Length: 366
Ligand code: M6R
Image (cartoon, rainbow, N blue to C red; front, side, top):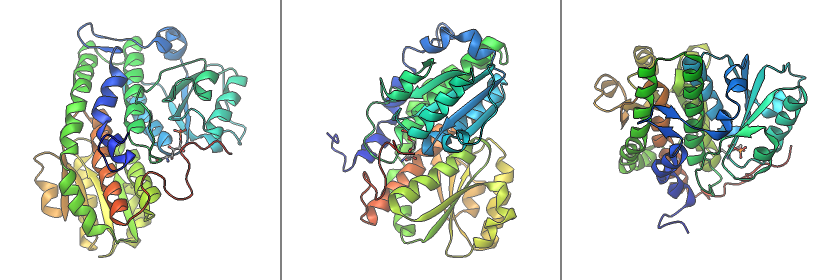
């Protein structure tokens, strides 16, 4: 059942190229230059004319929502707010009939996300679900939706659900951008073609596994770890930190790289590993100067870089290469090494990777 892998989590990490293909298959038609998504097509006007998109989710799904915020605003030019479902529902939020609320949930059973959707519906918003589990409560409660089609995710640590959520949300953003004319046909086509290359780019990111394992061995006894990223890769930093926390029980925090100097930099010393996402696109030079700041304080730098990078290589203690892609799609590749890093650390520490202590796969309590 684990397909020859030692843990479900590792199997699910490796399933990502296929899972992403399953997510876009039949929806993305590059030859015809269209994206077809039944749940969106049936409500296209309503969704594309949204005054605002509200995204509600918890945990890793919330991180996917943050990535989506950058993508929607960049491509479709629709204002987006991303909320923890648990905070949103308890603070008498301002919701109008012109709002579209998107609930992201792997299980489709998360109690707070479900309650947030019900609340928004009562106030007249249009509710759209992005779930993995077919027929789940949230998928039934929403007006329309799009499944991620990732297949069952057994490991408590979410991996393929995250990347397939981002895939669905990217397709949705592209579809709305096309409808509203906020990107050109050429740009639209470029995204579609690049999306088709993502599975093989993830395959090459997965090939870094042995090297990542070696890095895991060096840092497995760390007590703390920081994760930094900017722009599209800021939510990836949050997700990397969450993965490490939940399965290895090492304290980890993710920050936007520029926030370092507003506090967390005080933590840096020779004991502190800092994972920095420093891919070529997206404020690269700024990230390089953040790396210099860490280096001058003797922090240990593990950098995720674009293949062929030389600048960061000179500064970092370790580099992990990932293939280059369009900036909004980088989270789909930069996430992979972070999943593998936390996986290997947890295994080396002898932790229960698939069922970490105190956690459940679906959180149906409030
Ligand atoms: O099923 P959901 O996507 O609604 O679950 C949300 C969170 O409970 C979930 O993502 C959790 O944070 C994962 N264990 C993270 O790996």
